Amino acid sequence: MSKADDTRLPSPYSRPGSSSFTDFLGDHAPTLVPGSRSVQGGAPIDVPHGTTIVALAYDGGVLIAGDRRATMGNLIANHEMQKVFATDDYSAVGIAGSSSLAIEMVRLFQVELEHYEKIEGTRLSLVGKANRLATMIRGNLGMAMQGLSVVPLFAGFDIDTGRGRIFSYDVTGGPYEEHDYHSVGSGSLFARGSLKKLWRRDLDQDAAVRVTVEALYDAADDDSATGGPDLGRRIWPTVAVIDADGVRFVASDTLEEVVARVVAGRQEPRGGELR
Image (cartoon, rainbow, N blue to C red):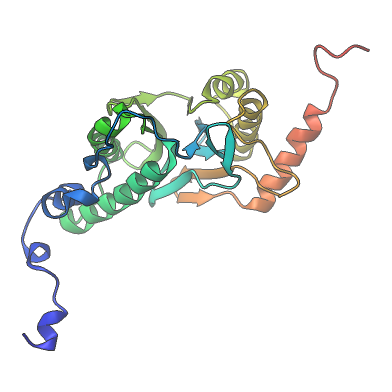
């Protein structure tokens, strides 16, 4: 074989096939598909877990955000974990659940969307993206049954309808479109209560960022697995906004200012304090 032959891609890469990269991977390297592995024995595995993710619609787009803490049992495994990722130009996903599997699934999902666009020559619709992610979660059901679940929250700007949309999932991959706002993870109950009080239909982008930080602050206030604003380390939530101009992550300087206003507001006398 000549040196030029050595540089060619293996034959599976040159054969026509599905527009799904996950299907391609399952056919030719199934051990690399996250959900294809199994855990021997019935003992639960202690792995880092990501926690609270929130998403909300605002006037002109949608926003998705997550705290930065990863926990392993009663320990803080990481203070600055990234839990929100852009999946293509007009969508992003936030992850809760087993961190390593979730990150692996997100990376595969990113390739899945790019592969589809290259093969089909067009972008997958937002609902199509949500359904592709549902299929990948369903493929992880065996691992979820052994305690290694992945529970993402998916959000994107629908360029066909001109609005932001939010999709949640259960561990079996069932996709559900959420309206206005939603949250997942161990602190989601507290975050959703906060969103319920603060969300308005006419929120602009700046107000939506403030409401998001308030919701994550409330989640961290009552859920030990959710990290609050870390003023000492200057660690802020990860916030991505998605509108007709695409996905953008809110700058840390902007988040620092928002966090400062939220924290200052929380220092006012509150219920339960004797005066």
